[in-house]
Image (cartoon, rainbow, N blue to C red; front, side, top):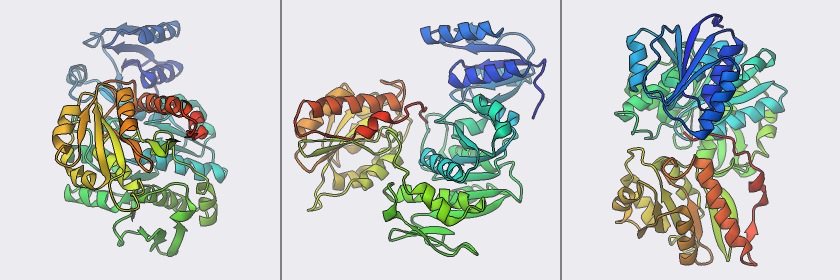
Length: 477
């Protein structure tokens, strides 16, 4: 733990993570100033609460205050090329993120999960295993509570389970998880990174401070990418894969099989799991491996996972209306996640396309062409929304009929009119939501409400009521 008492600290960004950092710094005796380039009603309300704590706040700020700071804590949405960050670095100010600050001040071991897709589900599975086996833990990081907000509780905990995205890992310095899990490394966030290799290297910072007695649990295909870039992993490595039978844990016709010494043989049958698809098999494999390195008996690991249902907005059934199923996969914010969603929809009996896809949003400079051949096999038609709709239409129109519409509500209505019994209407955007929505949860809720309104207007609507109670307090990658 680093001493923050009497330190002059600048916090850049007054979102939820910035506020959590301010409160932790304030309680630790630091003198805190927070700036944000925006000046919204919500931020003004937050600023009032910060000022009541003695924290200085500047909204609408485009440059950092011209004072000496010992430390700057930046939001993960602020890139390293941001002019304010560059100015701070030029002034020799130590710049870290809220994620790093929370880690530095925590008093328990950490288990971190990173990668493109699946880290949220895997983190929840790991949390379930630990909780089921009486380990005191808290899930935080990307998509969950800010790390700084749980620091006071960590002296009573066994582990923090941390979701870590590449933005958060960019600003780590001493971050060192005892167990580090890296999921897949599909193309993503190319609106922030110049190349995919830069994105891979950002994720690889997960391992940079590990030591020989720590653990790295890595998807075998992701490990191959790290090795191509000569990225070292200093810790003990366990690999997993749904496609590579040479991995330490692999998928074979529904069975999860281990070849780890002393843990050889079938571990679990995915037919006994509520999660479906090869991508979820990898999530389960990673969680099993975490339980194994923590020396939790296999039977107790499996017992914790048996009842784990898909999370909100992750390929989640909403309703069946007039024989048409509606699925909310708003969490799919890149092309790889869309591909996995398409493969998870059961095909029509005759093998004909049976999916009406709703996609689009804010582009992350991704290549949409690669999913085209799969779309030609599975998708009857696509309704495209948001800023990226014309780019996506140009990429997909050779593979499936594409219609651009002005809103998600219009897309739901048009898809409903086009579908026939046995079809599936799938919201799987392959894009960020920030052009039309607050976050992917907001987008998923708008879709859900539109479907529920449609279902209640007919007498044949079968609704998944469990969806209503899912926790929505998560953030988009």
